Structures are given as C-alpha cells and as structure tokens.
Image (cartoon, rainbow, N blue to C red):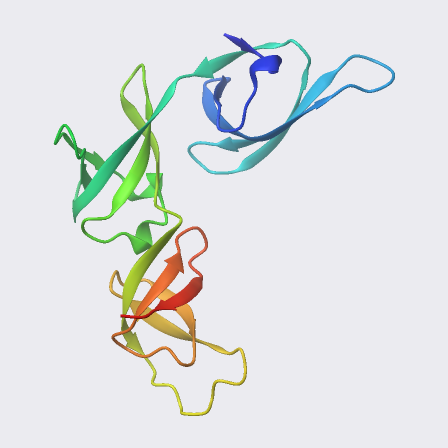
Length: 188
C-alpha cells in the first residue's frame, strides 16, 4: 500500500480492480481546509484520461510494473509476436495493447509494461519516432513547394501518413508513432 505522498508520474494504481497510470499530480495546500492531491490518471486498457482528487494521506493500492524490451518478429492469427533480446523468450501481444502498431516493422524494439505479480502484459509502447520508407505517393510537381500543403503517402508498414509535396516514393521519412505525423526526411 502507498499513500498520496508517494505519488509520482508513471506510477501504476489499482482502483476498483482497474489499473491506471499517473500522468500528472499536484499536491494542493489551500489556506483553509485540509490538503489534497489532484491527479490525472490514464486507464491502462482503454487509454482514457480520468481526473481524480484524493484527500491527503489516503492509502491506495500500488501495482508493481516492470518495463521490458522486446523485439518484433512477425504477426499471425494469435497477434504480434515478440522476443526478449536477452532471454530469447517469445510472447504474443494483441494489437489493441500496442500503441502505434500501424508503424511496427520487423526487427523494431518496443517496451512492454508487465504486471510483475502475474507476468501479464498490460501495454506495449513503440519508440517515439521511427524511420520508414515511402512505398507510394503521388509525384510532386517541381516548384510546388512554396506552400505548406500535405499529401497522402503509404509507408512500408502499410500505414498512411500525410507528407509535404517534395517527398517522393523510395525516400525514407521519420514518423511520430504517437500521432502518425511526419517529422522529417532522412538523407541517405
């Protein structure tokens, strides 16, 4: 058991049988009345944000979470298959548990949040950005780069990304896995 004084960003709590990560918290000591803690919690399963206020000193159930690296191998009917780089243990994770799964390609490293007591995978995080090759996009017209217009492009994983007009098929781009936005072109 932990108290509100132990709160920190990234801490995982068990509230009524549901797991939540603390996104942010603020200890408030008003001039009048008792102190309290305001938190923003993210549901591990759905990803929804919940605002919750706690009285100071309240005991809460902390869940021990381990972060483990895994390398993506392949996808089959069971889900996405990963391998731990040191133990070579292979696991299967459903696509709903992986944030940014549309940008996942063979050999990529991800970080899985594992419930330490039951050894179950809660969520899986991609790196913040990945480098992907553009497999198809309409060709840009020479001199049509003055405006900040974007066009659709398909990358090697099959996902669609909005890119600037000067990007052509075969070029490598850096993509933000959190929102699917174009970051920059990679020069070879």
